[in-house]
Image (cartoon, rainbow, N blue to C red; front, top):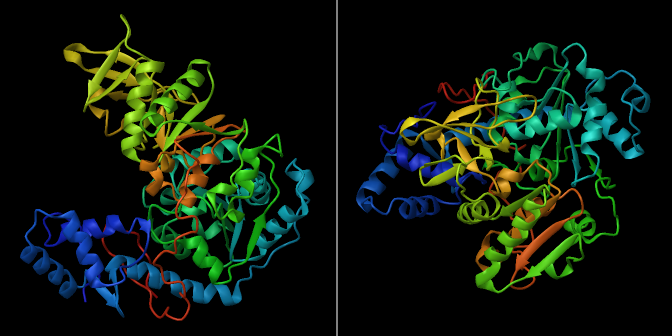
Amino acid sequence: MRRYFNYEHKARGAYILTALEKYLRNGDAYFASEADAFRICQRKYQNVSLSKLKADFDYLLENGDLVFEGSRLYLYKVQRYEDFVASELTSILPHNVVPTHPMVDMDVSAGVRLNELQKEAIQMARSHHLSLILGGAGSGKTTLIQALCLEYFVGGKLVLAAPTGKAARNLTERTGLPARTVHSALGKIPDEDFLDPVKWSTIRMVVVDEASMLSLELFAGLLSKLPANCSLVLVGDPNQLGSVGTGNLIPELLELGCPVTRLEQQYRQSDNESALFYNVTNFPKLFDSEELKFDDSFKLIPANESDIFKVVQEEAAKRHLAGENVQVIAPTRDDVKRLNEQLQQVVNPPADGKPEVTHNGITIRENDRTMILKNNREERCFNGDIGAAHVEPLEGGAAFIHVPLSANRKPKFYSAKIGSTLALAYALTVHKSQGSQYDTVIMPAGTDCQKMLRRNLFYTAISRAKKSRSSLSAAKKPCISPWSRRRSRARVCWLPKPTRRCILPHEHELQIPSN
């Protein structure tokens, strides 16, 4: 069997691998059967003849790019990552102890007061090779991270990381400590965060925030780098969206008995009696959308089905024009595109003397709320950065677009980058909003959105509101379905089958050392 596979489009069957890999970005790690995988390819490539599709699919099976484990069908790379993680967890979990020295007085040294549960979480993290700290929005996770990192920060003994550039930047702003992406820490994208390479031999603690977004591949990479006496602490909210990739790590690690501390006290909301506070903090206990509470902090704005987006537009525009930090969050990309166009026309309409530029059917004009879609080391900006656009017209209808950001960053882009690197940000998808906070969140919840309003997506959206204000625009009280969490197709019982490590020599893949 071949030891790696090639995603080059010229390789036979590469289009099939691309489709299957994209499908697995929902958290699944395998297909229940060959027939399931083949049906996905049929739906994706209806212009490809059935005979060619079948021949290429069989070729991938014969070549080892697709492999069976019982009736389950894996992409070769994913199976090897899963086997590697299983092998590592077999070694870690039965002897999950790291020698520690006495804990410093965090109340004094960190300048914050910690409750007893937070102190227990810190002690658990320091004394275990692998542990989890879980809590909902506003449960004090950031304060805990600050205290946890304090004694390891000096001397280069700490890696503070997050799965995305935006999450890493937000973590830095909240904690005052330099955070990096997991990709950068692993050397997969060198200097992505403009930080020095990690000297793994000196590291004694790795803290990963927003761990619910951690993919199987990145988790395998972290396990491959950890020194013997190093603690890996995964911090996150299990009710938020999972990884846009393979794996559903937090539920799987919990099922395997990984040490965990659950933070239950809520600190963010000023009014503990508010409906938003109730909905966010009690969300895991709610089994039906009828149990949601509504008041001025969590409003249901009734609307006819045909008028829902108009109502969202009007409510958001009113708050934008009043100078409020408001964010529209929508379930789908099509909804986001539609709302961005509508809000732009109301909040920032065209005017004589106001510069604007159009590319790929998207117009960006002076002062538009604009989001950067790609990391750019030279311009010191990251995917998810948002600022007010300054348009500098050029000859021939083109323009430079400046997007001033925090920390005196002023990235500049040519207008041809609109659509691929720049986009309007009056409305965002839930995935793009994850890790950020806004004064007010507004969300459409019509029947055409119901299939997307799954439990973790809905929770992630409403918990972005930090000042007790969140609104839903709906024809009736939304039906959030399914209310129970879907179980991902991952090997829950990792431990019984961890007999080999893997070598992945492909230059664009994560390198995991062999035994």
